Each structure stands twice: as structure tokens, then as C-alpha cells.
Length: 586
Image 1 (tube, rainbow, N blue to C red):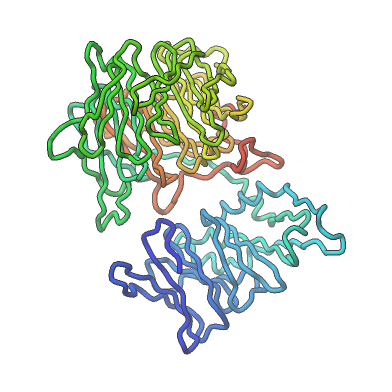
Image 2 (cartoon, rainbow, N blue to C red; image 1 turned 30 degrees about the vertical axis):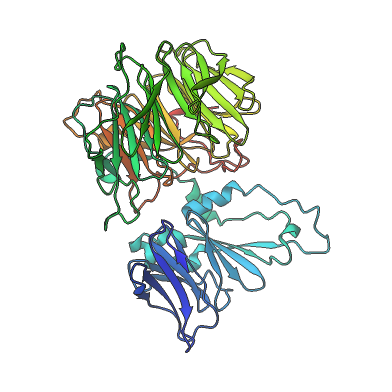
């Protein structure tokens, strides 16, 4: 049995008493078969293995070949024999993004079928070798034999009309894998020259028209003029915004026939939600002008509470009722950034406009520690539970690392602002931890950078051209494989996080309505907590837009091809090669 990648469709494979195999899709709510897929050999030779990919395709090993179906059609889509050498019922498995398909072969071999993206992935490991020192010299090294793509050209042609042709474009066979994997030595996938040529053909993906991606403008609140902060709830079914007038907006998606998961999506409009009482979540702005204040908020891990401030007291709101639970810390100084402790929702790190950081216990209403190290207001805070540290950033373009057990300062470093670049007094520096909790993203109007926490060293940096618009905000995707960055000219760029190389540019012509002023631009960007390819923008006119790639594409462009010998300094993030000429990378 297997679910589709998004968990909304259930499939199973079985064999009847007569020996006939079949794959069916189930209607889970009714416990009934929804459709039965055709094309299996009568009386299968053995146990049929199958797998799913990209929420669209099914594949199964049957009759000495691999058979493919579109999930929405019972008819067989195409069959590939991978240049022969397959057992009667080969075992198969896709990798996570569906770019590679492993197939068991005769003589204890494994064949890897790769589409265009898979070939690029294989090329990144082409120069890596396994340490064979622990293996016995008497055991023969595995042989690696390239298989011509011509063998699958017919299948590719048959599938081209369905968009599946790229899966059959190239094949790499790894044969003779006898014994334990620890005995492998110098295994390098060798691709055909044809495949090499194709992998070098790369072009930056440009989104210029609304039809080139899926985008949705969320229902508006006419009292809002500018979105200052934006976040998805941790459950992924709502978006919370803080406007410059101290008002909070909450959009919720509901389960429906068009949105079975109930998660945020660009395909279904959400509801601008508020409780039946009509109460609004509005921050305290006594004796302050919220339009001139530095707004900030933080959401608890269970989505039950939001801590927020807009120049006045800090407010704690109940997200279900919108009621103000408590207010505390009246200015001066005013709060400028908030972060919940990852292990204890009662502990909050509060960055202040007097350059200090206060560690506050909500339960006992007490400041436990006051951290001093910056010279200007705090603009970013991020915890790492793995490293037990708090990283802070300020308008002074300084980074500080604090031990989160005793709150001692461990390291400090100033950003290297490019020569000739002038920064505004209000220039923010934001920080966000990578999924590995060791590296973190630094966002400044002049640059994007990846830092390693222990030594506080910059391992990757991207600098816009001197004539380019400043960066307004940037975030990691939920899997930390992408970085979404917005610019003051309304452009949005998508980078491969492994090396901060540009892979897709979304131009302003693709999303604002034509009647909107040309100076409207994104101020904040937020990434969906479970969907790596979905993000949302908060605009300077009060609008919020959700973006996803076309379903036929499934992602934002492709990374540039790798250069031989290139490697990322960020663990578990494969390097992909050089990007376009519109960026400098260090």
C-alpha cells in the first residue's frame, strides 16, 4: 500500500487467487475501490512492487519491465525495459522528488533511471568515491556500465504528450553490486555523452505572466495599508499578518472537495477569519504612532497564542478567540523582535529598540536576563535547540551568538557590507536557522548569506548587482533547500540554498493587478511549513499573495548544472553549479 506524496490518495497492489496482479485506488471514506489500473501481465511471475511520485504517477515492476500510469487514468501510460536485464517482477523505488528511479536488475544489479533533474543530481556526486579501505581486496569492484538512451527512445516518444518523456530520457545502469555496500569502491555513475550535453543546457526560469505560476490574492481588509509581518501557522492551514496600523489579519483555509487537506493553497481562496464576537486583535499603540513603530510578532508552536507589539506594550492574544490574555513591558524601550524559546513557550527572547535583548518568563512576569552586545535596535532573533544558542542581529549589522543555558555571549561578527553600498538607518538584518540547526540564513538589504554557528563564519554569500533594488526580506523554504527573497522593485527570486545560486525569477508583471501603482512591492515573505514550493508575500499596499509553481512543473525552476569538484559548505545540501551573470557569489 502507498499514499500519494501529499497523503490524499491511497493505492494498493495485490494478487488474486488466479495469480493476476492489479493496482487500485481506494475511496478511504467509503472503503471502496475507486479505480483499477489496467495493463498488467496475466498471471504475474511474482510479487509486484509499485511506487508513486509527484502526486501524479504510479510505477510498477511487471513482465520484465517498468510500467507507468497517470493516477487519473486506468490505462497504461508507457512501458520501459531499461535496456533489458530486468527480472520478471523488478523491485522499484523513486527518490523523494521523483527524479531518480531505482530498479533491481539481474545478477544482483541495480539500474538507476534518471530524468533531466536526476542526471544533474548524479553529476554532483560524479567525483565522490567510497572508502574501500575496509573492503577485502579479493572482492571485485562493481562495474558501472552506461546504457544508451536510445533503448528507451520509443517509450519516451510515447510518453512525451503526457509530460513523462523526461523520465525516460536517460538511463544509468549500476551492475554487479555483489556483497555488502561497505565493499564498494570508486563507484562513479558515468553518463552518456548525449546526457552530458543535455545537462549543460540550462536557462534561468523567468515567470513573467500570471499564467506561468499559480498565485492567489487573499481577501482584503480595506483598513489595512501595509503588511509589516507575515507568517504561516505551524499547522499550515492559515496565514497571519500584522499590518502597519497594529491590526492582525488571519486567513483560514477549510477542508472541501477542492481542498481535501485543508492546507493553505493558491488554488482555493481562504476566509478572512474573525470570531463571532467581532473582536479584533489590535496591538497597543498608546503614545505611539504604529505607522512609525517597528512591528513584531511570534507564534507559539501549537498555534494557540501570538505575542505581538507595534511600538507599545507587548500583547499576548488567544488565536481562537482573539482575546487579549495579557499585556506587559510598556515602552520605553519598545520591543522590536520576539522569539519563543523552542523548548518552553513561557520563555520569550525580546529584542528592544535600545539594543538590548531581554529574556522574559511570561508565567512569572519576570525578566530573567538582559543581554547587551549590540549598539542599535535588535532586528532578528533565532534559537537553535541543537546548538543551545540564540543568534541575534541588529540594525548595527552585527551578529551575536549567545549560549541559551546561561545567556553568555559566545561570538560576535559584523556583516561585510559591499564597498560602495550605502545602507539606510532603518536597514534590518534578519536571521533564520537552517533545518540542520547549525547553519543560518542572514538577510540584509545588500546581501544574502549562510553562516556556520560554531565559528560564526560566512560559508556562502550572494550580492545583488550594484544597480539592483535592495532586498526587502528572505526566508528558507520549509525543507531548507530553497531561499525565497523579495526585492523593493517587486521582484521575487528563488535560490538553491546549497550555494545561493539563482534558479527562478518571478517578475512583478506576473502578480500585481494591472491597475495597481508601480511602486507596490513586497515587504515580507513567508514560507509554508510543509509545502517547500509554496510561499506568501505581504505587500506595501496591504495585499497578501500566495504563490505556487504550476502543477505541471512542480517546482520553481531547476538548479544550474554542477561544476566538477564543486561542493557545498552546508551539510546535506548538494552543490549545484554556477548561476546567471546577474549575481556575484562568494
